[in-house]
Length: 317
Ligand SMILES: O=C(O)CCC(=O)c1ccccc1C(=O)O
Ligand SMILES: [Mg+2]
Image (cartoon, rainbow, N blue to C red):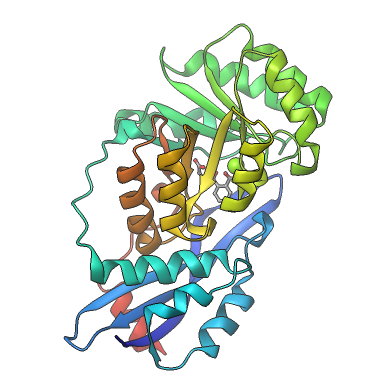
């Protein structure tokens, strides 16, 4: 079976830049794939790379798409190297649409964790999201000096209604001592759902030690960006939270299999993709049905797409 293949590169600016320990991020760039079969049925895929997390770069992905001819077949999937995990996700989820009709998505706002702006703007940004039903929020730390962030956390903690939970994501930007400061706060409150990647992946042994010493769970994110890294951490005994960024994790089928056969404490998470990869990822999330809120409360970071955006993208070039 052969499919007509075209692709387009997109740029999508954030409404406000996203400030993390990795730096300031202003524009999401990626690739939309379009497949068409002989019955003129169309399926879409999205490559949304995140090289800071060890995925291929946008340039690698463009080069790969350019290396393919105008006709492709699903046999391509078995030859896609593990060095192109965002491409594996995009092509496999596009081909999958021809095989399996997806059930409608039904995920209420309480199933999502909403990504707050870093620093002080978080103090007001949570409120409209809470009014819409959000009960879990994520706040970046390791961005401002520690004492400022501890102070802002105390203010946020006073403002948030009871039962609302906060995920603190340091993107590997803390020292072990700073991590202990945050974990000490967690000993006396149930506000913190988990502390995400406080230390860089190379400090895995220290993360394991800290996990055993404090009540607040630790979550790995950068450490487990590809499914194989997740398997390695699991086999080395990690039983804390795993944050998995679906769109850069490689083959969705392999992910499905691993999740169904291992009792992971899992959070599926966004890479700030467009509705194409988001829809594919949320279908997978609905199937895997992890207990914890989905890290996909991110649409407020962009203008909503126009109904005609895919058409516009194809006719623009
Ligand atoms: O996981 C979430 O809840 C939101 C997504 C998110 O935080 C994120 C989005 C893009 C790149 C990195 C990260 C991250 O978790 O570090
Ligand atoms: Mg993270």
